[in-house]
Image (cartoon, rainbow over all chains, first blue to last red; front, top):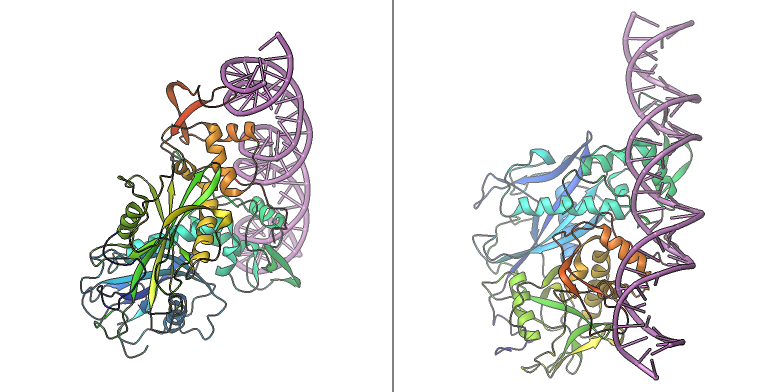
Length: 244
Length: 244
DNA sequence: CTTTTTATAGTCGTGATGACTATAAAAAGG
DNA sequence: CCTTTTTATAGTCATCACGACTATAAAAAG
């Protein structure tokens, strides 16, 4: 042991850290995965795009701060039902050139994407296709990649996919969530069989089928069911590269 | 937006936070899961057991701090090869009664458990069976439960189990890892078939079988293979309760 | 030398899954 | 109005993974 108690926090005995949250806000627009980005107005990285985020206030937990930022950035009235997941914390000493900043990263999933409010001191805010995201400020490329990995893995084992869907959705829409996030195609009859065989994943809407929208046969509508986990998991097709 | 730039960190414009790491150090002793605990010597929670941990120093990342604490608490010379996994960050405003502390929690896995060095300002340090862990200081019960959940889930999809084993081990020892962490029994032939069918999970040691140790037929020795993920996963037997 | 204990090999049936075909019900386009 | 296109849904079939189980081998214990 060294000369300090492991849990005796002498205030300012050590250099204090700023604590922030960063949000990877994901949604589906026109069948493609999109990310909410803001353009920075100040140095460092002025003019570069970054993930939205901000300080954790003195009376907030990181989760509370993340939900507040999410509401501010998206302009949504009610974000209480949205899926918000803590990813991990980024604490490399050099990640912000000005001072020591520890950032707790979150992934948020939206069913439908309203245009971001933008404004404030950020120059602008917008949805950007995931594939087109260029180099971001700070270590936000890494955070975004980690978010994508996590969501993709969660789709296999949880009912998370419905968080990307509106309250009522077709199985085709649900399948598009999987295909878009994983970047693979799935066999439609097999996907259907698997989803319906998982108790509590989805449940049919009492009377309806959607007519006016699509071109083909109208699809039945479903709602998210009470289940949260998928047993057994819905595994994505194995990559061609060896698993080792 | 409110009256501050999301990423303009005016030093001390906001109340700074202390940042610590907490470690859930797990090992197997005599076929039971054990946790490394320290007894607190000071208020608050004086006399209560807690997870080891400590401050993140100004030039450290949380991972670096966690590895340093792990070396200090276990007395191990080389912790560079040990599995250390960031769990999540705990930031509830009231979790430390004295001041605002944000703690990044890690899970660490040890193959063999040396007696902890103890000493310092903690009254003592020791390995405690996971089942016997009483109420811990702060929110450490929650952290420990989260660590257990995470490790159990990781065993299904990764080659993590070998991190609990010495460099050379038998399939029986590997199976004990699964059974101990999951708290279930597994069929030995089936476990063997599954492990050996996963390419890169384990590979046989060139010439050997272990003789002197056990009572029955000597078992072949294996090493950890190059694989990190299990495809398909090694699922734990489903709980009797409904999956919904 | 028998019993006990553990490791390892193999069998069998069931269920999940991938690949595929077929049919139904709508819009689109002549 | 009829054909084509498009999407949803139903069903088939073979393979494979897995749980449950039996059998054999090789050591220690008595």
